[in-house]
Image (cartoon, rainbow, N blue to C red; front, side, top):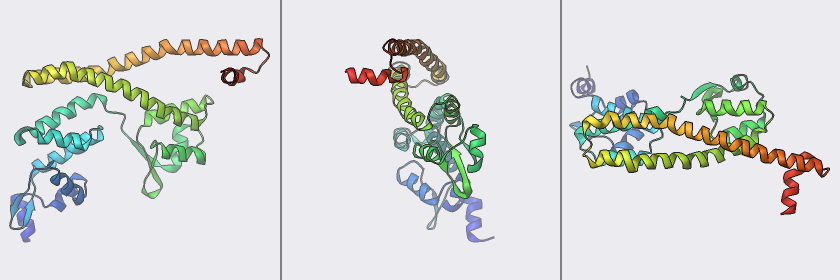
Length: 265
């Protein structure tokens, strides 16, 4: 047994071993440590050794990042939490985010995408998907679809005859508007339920209630968005039918209604 093997057996893992088990690069681990996200290793001579607690911390950080948690926010949370309870705080946030987790990303051979979608994917459509971050090229001719549900919905719209390029633009608009709505819901939670929880000293017996509220927010917010959409869509369709009727009465092509309205303005 080498000296390094003996050190690992009695004191833990070297940074290289830790990186392999955490699925990270050594550079990433050192960057996390420099930001204070990782407790210092135990030193034996000039070699640092890491234990199970370091691996657990890295796994929590990775999961939070996958849920959309910014690294700077994780850093602030760790910095403001006593070391002995940092894991508990990180896990608490992870539990809070779990109900909002998107559908897991999907990996496949690039050639499989058209069959999976059920529509042809032309060269310009490929580029639009890549530019929008909806498809990510990997090594070996493979791709990753970060949000399969969203891409599937786009494919359904293409089958209805809507242009792929316009759908990609619409996705950007949806992200902007829905992002504003979700921010309002989160802000409301922060100013009410969360503020009361913090104000009372983060009592342990209320932790589950807070997680339950966060989990229940998702279906409530989704129902509110869908109900509002259902309320707005008939009005938009009614306006469209009025424009079509006016176009027929004036002897214009129904498709020229918007252009005629613009020229009148």
